[in-house]
Image (tube, rainbow, N blue to C red):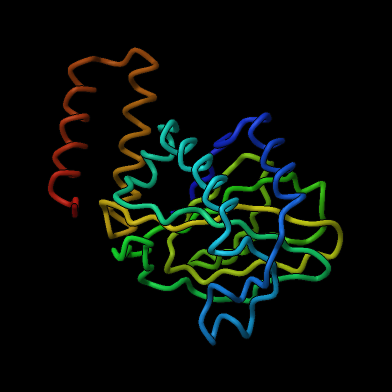
Amino acid sequence: MLVSIPQILDAAQIAELRRRLDAAAWVDGRETVGAQGARVKDNQQLSEASPLRLELGKTILAALARNPAFHAAALPVKILPPRFNRYTAGGQYGFHVDGAVMHLADGEQLRSDISCTVFINDPDDYEGGELVISDTYGEHLVALPAGDAILYPSSSLHRVMPVTRGARLASFFWVQSMIRDDGQRRMLYELDTSIQRLTADGADAEAVLQLTGLYHNLLRRWAEL
């Protein structure tokens, strides 16, 4: 399931992130991948040890915590602290699948169910740089406005196209969801959004209550905590 979520970050937050990242010290993005990923990855990242990465990551996490659309789509249990990358001067990331298990700083592990990219500058600032996500329906090209996010299954084959002008800035991270199966997660998301629309439209309260009960009973049956 591909889900686009608008305005995870507002204009003031984007401006502050841009200001801090423009002055940041970037390192080779291959720092965080294994041998296979290193062969196709050509970008820059904030170092894993960077205090700036941790500080700006908290901004992203706080924004996610306030966003009901993100919670409806992801149903998160754990979120890997956000990382930040920069693509410029032909930088790209060839087709790959994200690792299945991520290691957290406290020694715990996270199963990567959902990958998320939050765009920090607008597509007009650069050429190329589209996130290409491949699934059974073909390839989807994603280049969203600054502050918007895209969520997609971590099992998806995906790449970032070469950036031929300017620089593409983004935050990226992984989510372990209460719902491991993408198909079940899609059904719950569609049911949830339908309930919200029916409620807003003043639909029959008893029918909405029955659908709400169905949502929670399915969540109770499928959730892994």
